[in-house]
Length: 470
Image 1 (cartoon, rainbow, N blue to C red):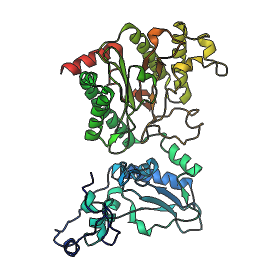
Image 2: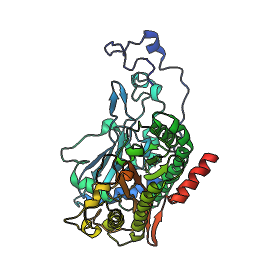
Image 3: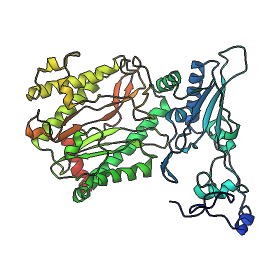
């Protein structure tokens, strides 16, 4: 919260928010401060992994000067900003994670050599803290330590990340710089994340574990949510608390979709009631301090028990998820995971008499697709430092690529029968179900990182009963 104090230097024009400092303040503010010794930290665990990633990027652009910006604060309203999060490529290549300073720049400078492939010298430029003799210390509410607390030093960050550092004022842009937004650079930094290293996998496990605790919190809060006019926000709020207490925050806007809202794939308004007898679909993921995120969906009966129709829909979605999991193997094309899930979806809705054609006709790649009305989204996406990770990778490396050990991706089939969809029986209208798990591919097969969060009808009902009775 802003305190109402001045946030400008003394010479700035006087406004309602920017009053001049009295002379006594200006004469004494830089004195009377204790020495603040700085101990150099050891390099953080991800520093070595980030160095390997930088070397791969360097090799992909011989002789080119690369500029990777962290990004700047973004205005929310007047003089307040959104919470800062570094660009994912910057975070991946530095390991600075949630500690990143806004406006920082990572520069790959080609070494002076006749050989174009002689590599790069890498420097991290950022705005170092100003000492207490400067006006910035007390007058700048964005970066002044009097306002926001201690900021990192060049030497401290150099030791922490094991990378050369320099003050942001020393950075100069070049006319031939390759920057984020360049198609080739975006492709390289995206494809670099397709296969996760050991550090990344460990962080993904951590994010999933915290998310699992968040789902326990949600279940415990369901009775309170059912009493509130905007119960969906009660659910969102308890998950937010867990995400902030144990992680950096949410990896994306939580979807808390109860009743017919569950049929809207990206329902984030979260202003509806949570009604006993309905299902609530919660799609939520905690982002760890490293910025790696989980992405998990569970569909829960608000009163703790599925009715017969809800059970039928839920078990079909679970069958589709399990079919996709069974197909996932090293060497299998990524799109085959989706195809396995869609075959189940098409078969079951055809059996229910919902489709105007047979399942076989619906699955025809050219003339079919009728079943996609009830599941328009894909079954899987890569997951990591972005919730939809590796987004700029080539199609032949992503959707048409083959699964490799170290890949992390979701399996998330669903069925959504919107409340006003006249193509389905009345009993199905308003029911939306999605089950989403985070999968690590290994040489021995897929590992469901979120398998500890109950998935089957019986296990979900038992889970709700256990948590709410605790």
